[in-house]
Figure 1: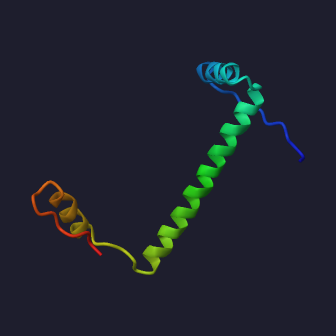
Figure 2: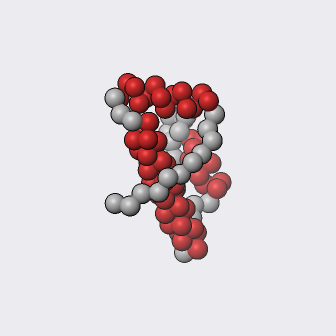
Length: 86
């Protein structure tokens, strides 16, 4: 696999935490950073996918009225909660 060197300035406190993790896990600092970056990129890709899915639902009219949702949420503290809005 080809690699590319990336450089970033990070706060000293974050760098120290990375160093502590590297020591505790007995892994190189670069491995820790690569794992963290890969997890963050994956999370952001999933966030983007979910956002596009939600926007498609809105475009298709698959939405729940705000007042109906608020009434349902407010009813959760009562003895007889409302059914989940459809």
